[in-house]
Amino acid sequence: MWKWIVAAVVVILLIQSLLWMSWRNSPMREIERSSAAVENAKSWHYHTVRTYTGQPPNTFDKDTFCPTFQHTIQSGTDHNGAPIVFDTIIYFGRSYSLVAGQWASSGGRQADINAQGSIPIFECPHGSIGSDENSLPYDAILKDGTVRRGEIRDVEGDSCRDYEIAVPTPHDPQEKEFQFSMCIKEQDHLPRETRRTAPGAEQEGVSTFTQWNAMTEPQLPAGFPR
Image (cartoon, rainbow, N blue to C red; front, top):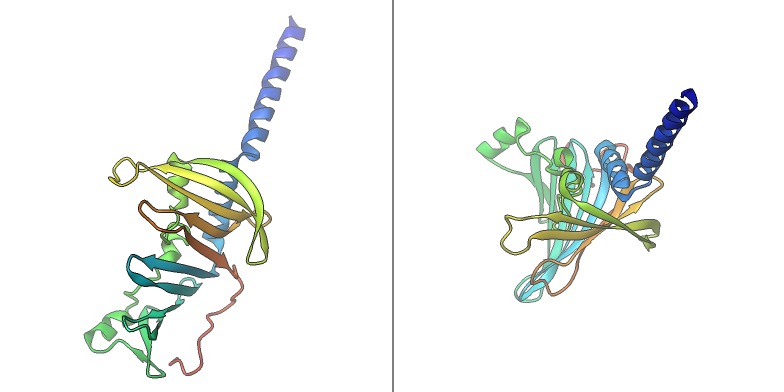
């Protein structure tokens, strides 16, 4: 009888071990690791190109250092085809814009409100993934999503693996499932790229994430008021 009990225990432990190994190596487990890595990240660079029907594309570049600093450069062309650039910074809750070569803060009452830190950096509490137009937050993926492991490829000189992700969106009249891919460098579990083709879009949207934790302090441009 004792032999049967011992055998049953061994079988149970073996099954538990196999289930644990399966989960440890599953695509969803890598999403968990990536979520934790992004939550602990303090700085990164974000880049995307947004296209709108009948309008020239706009390029967005953001350097973020949580929780105090975000530098955004939006470049494109106006209706006459002339280049146009919007250069803005959020620093300790205040908003600044580069106007005629000079950094100027918001004026009047708004400046007093900003002095209290009322302008947040959205990505710092909410995360970089899900804050762009080509992905959803990790919480939504982990709660309701399905994940399929893809191939390894190169993004901006980094080797990363694609993960094909689908999350049900039953209340969205345009699509019942939000589908996108995220390329994760499995050594540090940080995403390097997200891709998605939205309903009715003429081309695929691509966001890249680089320079993770490269900044040890905010990189303020020359002439910025301190």
